[in-house]
Structures are given as structure tokens and as C-alpha cells.
Image (cartoon, rainbow, N blue to C red):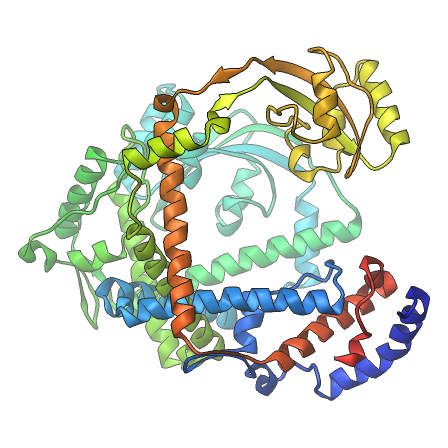
Length: 594
């Protein structure tokens, strides 16, 4: 057996050679050829290193020996093989051939193309100059607390102005009329913001005006394009400042966001103009009425209208290239809660939403003309989405096929496990677990002097799962938690117990309550048991499918490649952490041995 000291010396001497070998190509996974190495094969399906690296990304802070890392990689690869088997099961059933599946893929690709166009033609073109940063800093010495309402129609703006002048409460009007996303949640309250931040920063006309309105007053309607804005200033205060470097970086980020929003809007406007779109107001009004009626009837389930064949073909939008029918727009409609029953969604909201979807279509057409759809990142992301969608559909089918438990099975389980329902006396305690007896005794002294034990648990316990809940353990039996459980049952209610040494460290605790023995009747837990049974059966159904599929499949693993990747991970961690890697136990041989 090599000593720890000798092993460290051997490992440190080997590190330069290992790094050199990695650069030569032993572990070089950055090149396209290396990333396409086959790490496993399931029947005729190749699982490449790129697939595996996407599925499993090891954390540098983890510390494992080489053999442990090889075992972890094999376990993760088994998980990936199971994922692929379920996914291929969905493909064998033809789940990817349904119209719904194809629509989802098309929508996903369009969204990716939109992001790529914005990245290439907007984000990569943005330049923020030092002069612009200096100008922004000269205006941002104060911050203001705003309320905001905006509409997209002149009649709506006139009604808002009339109600405000009559003294109606601002927040109520914002909820009823404003197109601002903050209206429904915060009654038009934008909170505190400084120059260059918030919605006013994207409107050159509104930005200076918002900081000229006297505190306690409002102004509006201010027309910007097709929008009408109302701004109220509630309060004003000096803006807290960071270091000069922090201020400049924050200003750079703010200006970048402003330019990005402006350029994205310009792109959308250009696409709308070039597409030659026209909205048929009568047909759009009819479609909106269909949607609102069903949402108001059952807002929780958000049903979509079931249109007749004639109604489905009604043309609502039209462009130079194609018409958009009522069914086209319903296909784009996301099933999401629109608003509360007493705050119906407006036709302007839907107009804005549908226009955005049509713009996404137009940008996607533009992206294809530019050849962006052939970008390797787009193709890879499309494949990943198809795979994940196939897996989800097949997984849900397997879960749905699970046979629900019968009343007889639930009764049998209840009778066969009386210890789960015949509850003995239990104690509910708050506990703080620390590493040393000295620390435990100091915390116990502080708790007895009046400090809150839950706060001490939040600040000091080494049980991370219990820190956020102030160290409150679930009610425990005498035979649970070993020495801690025994000590808890020897301590009166409301009292602190002694310091208890456990296998994990040293505990202090207080008994909060005592739960008397009782028997849980079947009727009171029947539905909970049914739900637990159902979930377990669904998991078993999926696990059984994977097991059967594994038995039928021919599975091969590239053990050499797995070992090489494990060695790369170990070397990377050693380089990042020095020899702390070896503190978790010696590997059976230095990494160079693999």
C-alpha cells in the first residue's frame, strides 16, 4: 500500500505529464472528432460523448477517487441508457408523428431561430461607449417611486383620464385599464427606479418627463406611437451608490439593455412592415369573444374553443405570403391563466399577443433565408428537444398504464403494516447539530440565556435540510435518531436536553411538544394511501419498462473512454484543489495507471 505522502508526491510529479498528454489528445474533448466518440451503443443507437456530457456535467467541487469517479460515470451512463430506451420506445410507437408533436417542434425551432437572430444581429452588434456611461451617471443621482398606466386606444386613455380627474383610486384604474404587466400584480406600482432603469428607459419621450413631474402629482395621457401613458410620482430619494467600478458596470449593463430592447423593437417593426400584415378587426373581435367566453366560464382549466369547420377557416390575419386563420391563432395560444374572473382579458391584450406570435413566424422565415436554420447549435437543440419530448410522452403513457390500487389492496397494506398507523408516543424537538462538543456547549449556554434556538439552528446547524426550518425535526419516536432520540424522551416538555454525541456530531435540543400514543384509522388515510400507491405503481411501471427494454437490447459500453474521462475529471479537480482530492481516501493507483 502506498502511503498518503508518497501518493501525493507521485501524483504531483505526474500532473505535468498528464496535462501534456491531455493537450496532445488523450483527454481533449473540445475537438469535434473527440466529442463524437461513442461512449455506449444500444442496439444500433450510438450514445456519443457529447450526449453524455450534455446529460451529466460533473461538479469541480466534488471530491472522488479515480475508482469512485469511474463508478459514478457508469451509474450516470446507465441512467442515460434508460432515458434513451424510454425515448426509443416513444419513437417505436410513432409518438413523434402526431400533428401536435410536429407543431411543438416547429414552435420550438421558431423560438430558437428568433433567439439566434437577436444574438447575431442585435446582441453582437451592440456597443456601449464611455461617453454614454458618463452621461447616464450624471442623471442617476436620485431614484423615484412611480405608478404607471398605459393603454393602446384613445377612447381608453380618455376614460382613464376622466376617472383619475374625478379622484378614483389609481391602483383600481390600473387593474381595469392598464396594459402594463405590473397592473394586475401590483396595481400599476413600478417601485423605486433611477434614470435608465424600468419601462421608461425604452421610451426617449418618457424618460426625461418621468424625472420632471413634481413629487405627488401625475401627468398624462402622453402619447408615444400608438400608446398612451399616465405617470405618477409617489416619492423621491437619493440613490444609494456603489464603488466607481460598480457604478460604471451597472450603467454599462443598463445601457446595453436599453439598446437591446430598442433594436429588438425595430426588428419587430421591420418584420411587420415587410410582411404586409393586415388584421381583420371584425374577425378578430369574434375570435376574442370566443376565447373570453370560455375562459370566464372555467378560468382554472383554460379550455380552448372547439370551432366548427367553417369557423376554423375564418381569416383573421393576412400577410403578403399567407392568411392566418382562427385555427392558426388558436394553435399558437398558450394555455395559461389570463386574468382573474373579475378582470377579463382585453382585446388589446390578445392583439398584442397574436402580433408577437406572427412576428416570431416572420423572423423565423427571415432566419431560414439567412441560413440560420443550418447552424449546428440549432440542429443540436432541435434534436435534444425532440428526444426530451419523446421521453416525456412515452413516460406519461407508461404512468397512465399503471393499474390503480384496489380498496382490498389498500386494506391489506393497512393491516400488514400496523406499526405505521399505531403510533407510540412521539416528541417534536428543535435541534442544532455542530461538529465539536465545545461549540455545542457554547450554543446551549446561549439558548438557555434566552437566544432563539431556531435562529441558532439556522446559523449553525450542519444539517442543511433543517437550517431553513430552524432545526425543527418531524415528531420522532424513542427508537429513532439513536442517542438523540433516547435523550429526547428523558427530557420534559419545554426543557433543553444535554449535549448529545451522535455519529454525525454533537447535538443540542429542546422538546417543543409531546404527542400522545394514538391509532390512525384507515378512513382518515385511505386517500393518501391511494395516492402513494398510485405514484409507486407509476414508478414501477416505468422501471419495469426500462428493465424489459434492457433485457431485449444489445448494450455495449466503451469502458476505455469512460476511464479516460474519469481520469480527466480527477486531474481537473486536483489542479483546481491541489492535493485536497486525496483527503477523501487513496485511489487504488495513481490516475496515470488508467
